[in-house]
Length: 491
Image (cartoon, rainbow, N blue to C red; front, side, top):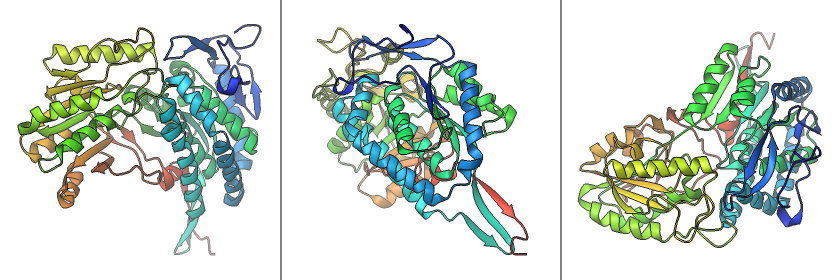
């Protein structure tokens, strides 16, 4: 900080700086942090510093939770029609500022500008629309005999979101939370705070009452832990690593609050013997590399018939090498990964793949040729991988694909399920009945047959160590509702 203001390298969108970059949004006001701790936000494409981001102290958390608690009684009693009006206003504002939000995500976490506009910003629109639709359709009560069964907002919610899909992960929590009549403290990642600050400004502009939506940034072991432990927080929703989810759940247990988790994944992509191999492998590589591989549902384990391994290697090599890497503000396929820590983690896992004897088809350690600065990863494909190798079991979170051979579809299903994760799965075959049967046997929360389109109204969440609870559409709305039974309601 300099003279009480955040230090910045350069203005961002359209030459306009973000006026609230060094503040928290608490109780309807943009306020300075109570402490001096900051996180240096680095542009991953250039390694230049963009801003010093304030890190919340316990006092900031207390203030934000207190504001949310004070606002809850009035906000929870508003009508669905009133909340719908504010949400529709928020949707208009979000779409009016769409290009700015997209560019902010490119600057803060490196996703290409084209992908920010076509996907990263678009999912924000999709989730607001899905929450509005869910609220419009929700039946808030029903009668069972003389007993009324009704839904009510759960209370004060803490929302902890990651950096890889900044608007997707924030909006998919915050908007259903608003729709349900809850109040909240949002703690987005310090690695992608810019778009989240802009979103908080839009919530304010839309006219939501003071204290309903509060925004802070902070370290997980300080602000995140304080939110998870707080006696006045009724629910915590976290998207992040399995390690972070476990830590939050343990801390939250003492106050018996609801915990919703969307965590890690190591998703299998089963390419059946009767699939179009060229199409399936090419699309599988492209899906793995979406958002530079920084997606929890990425199909990072490609299972192919062992008899077709040689063909699959050649196809995957060509598909991977077709991805250009470079400045995300230009016309390239892939930008950098989010930060130096993630860059080093991915490099270590690529080296582990080499050391453990997997066949390096293309890519490898180091930056792509011609890129000497920035957190750029070489698009990497390993083949002849066995499911006990590190690259088959650990979530890489980068553009790294592991191709595993199998002899029978029974074996493929066993390999697919041989992981602590259970977020997503993919099946490629023209035989739809076979695909449906295989889908029922995969222990995952979401399955895409023949690369079907993603839908914002479909539930999303995982089995096993990929978390619990479901987000998106009506399922996301129900996450923030409690059920109350009132016997004798009819007298």
